[in-house]
Length: 346
Image (cartoon, rainbow, N blue to C red):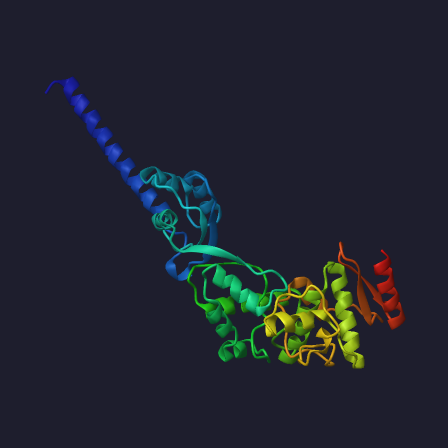
């Protein structure tokens, strides 16, 4: 064999070996970084949003930042091999999924989550209607779950439903989804929020279930009464003061609850004297003390107000600025009446 040919063959052989080694190293790195960051047993769920019109490259970088994949470089390779569009939406992914599995989910739209926003002050029936509207579960199933004795006892609630204990917030669920799981998730969030405002529900120094229930009832009323956040503790203080001296709470919100949630009528524009005479234990004009249960799902402002009410001598409050939602607080009935005249004059 001529020497130049021999050198050429040796060079080609060397290049082939180098190429095989590089391919092997590349394959090792690809499989290494394509593997999920966690094993299935330690996988953590992560809510991940794919924005409309977002490129696969941008998604890959955010997946890496979220700890869902090891390397966006491998993701870029997968995206070049499969150019199908990623479907916009909200997904529940976890760190135990491989990059290929995540790509399949985002392309096919699997396990897509749908947002449900529960406004503060929503009632149990209105909350049920929101989940039904989104197709998560039926209203009937939701209401049945909220009245399930097993779920109620799980949270040590001394009431007949979970009303007041389903925290108002934006949640993400698959559809359809178990109504009982939905109710438990909202209740779990509620008690997490109580912990955030330093309310102990278990262990030494914890409030009793009855004490918590009473505070949540007050919070549910405050939620339906206040508009300016700084006035919520004052309102809670008025209700606490009235309870202490045996004075009726006289909250229009409780009368409204009777009309809309119990009697099933349209929301009233005005509460008349005849409405305050309705013979129902939720009527705080006619019956002293707290109503039988919460009248809405209170948010954090109302909960803080109920558990930490303002210490004042106020016994009355009246709306004096409808546009700003401001109230006039007073200690005597004469001051309360004068506030009404002031509001009419303005």
